[in-house]
Amino acid sequence: MNIYFSGIGGVGIGPLAEIASGAGYSVQGSDLAQSLMTQQLIDNGVNVNIGQDGSFLQASHQQQPIDWFVYTAALPADHPELVLAQQLGIKVAKRDELLAHIIAEQGWRLIAIAGTHGKTTTTGMMVWAFKQLGIPVSYSVGTTLSFGPSGHFAPDAKYFVYECDEFDRNFLHFKPYLSLITSVDYDHPDTYPTADEYLEAFMQFGQASQQIITWSDQHNEVFAPGSTTTVLTPDQVDSRLNLSGRHNRRNASLVAAALVRLGVSNDISSILNDFPGTNRRFEKLADNLYSDYGHHPVEIAATLQLASELSDQIVLVYQPHQNVRQHLIRRQYTDQFELAETIYWLPTYLSREDPNLPILQPSELIENLTNHESVKIAEFDDQLWNNIESARAQGKLVLCMGAGKIDDWVRSRLQIKT
Image (cartoon, rainbow, N blue to C red; front, side):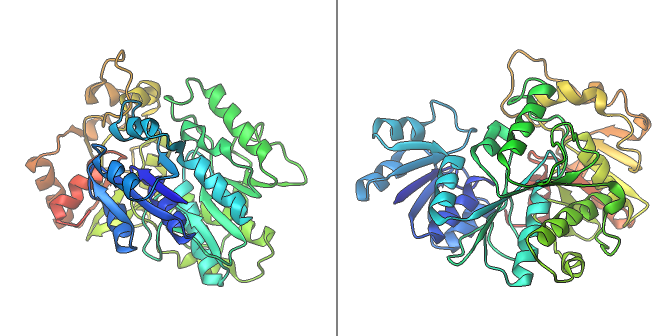
């Protein structure tokens, strides 16, 4: 099969391209810009074009007819490559349709990691544990890893570990053998207009899962306890885990419980304590400087709690994500920032917006913060970077958070290749 991936550098598409390539399919694709993911794919022999005007797709199809054109929900309906693929009569599908096809074709048992927060780290932990235990595993995780590619095809694998995202209702394409539910907090208003619709989607996901492991404080009206459901209480966090951050210890406890369910009898806690982390999840970029993908009040509080275990002087640089999301969560910004002595608040990163909603300004988003006096409105400029460097020089921990351009901006200032 010959597959073309549009947006091949994306955190969902990139790992899938690696899996398809490993499975022996012919793989190529394109993206608008170079990234860690596109470089990883190129290093693995995948033909990646930077630019999406349709010419590379046309040439690839002429050289060898393309069977599947795979894209993400972020691709607009009038995108040149999508329009061309439809004109050429190529099968057009979103990423999860292809992944479901590969899982069925290979006969893998799907271990799905789902939830509003912690999916990427928990998936990374599960993959790390399988690797350390010497158990063959195929997997897809939505970031780059220090201990392997983002997506991997193991020909002798029995299991497939997948970061099963609720955005665009992606996770409803699957019937997992075992699902880990990390948390359920209303998110993705562009997919789920109401909190009830969000919970309903998780209910459908739970019903499609043969087995579930989750927490007692995470909407168990959605995951009704039964013979196939393991519900952990907060006091069941494994005391042998010494990972930084309460949320990381909780996530690791889910992984440990899942491995026990799968019949692993090794000392799992010692393996998880050596977990090196994943890209953009409290990732250390330099001395006293960390990057994190968090952009929800619950994630912010959890990551600041983690940072507080390492330093009692925390400077937070925060970029809100999506104006449509800010309209829904603006009143949730209250006491989550109290562990930061200084907060540099950036303008909201705009993506997939409702043009009818006014853009909320930083001054409107911070009005309910309990430590309002600690906030400084900032821009991506030399002054902000000078403030970051000054805080680092004083030995303070600087945490840069957000799912938009903040990570790329910091890396460019540090001259780290992205």
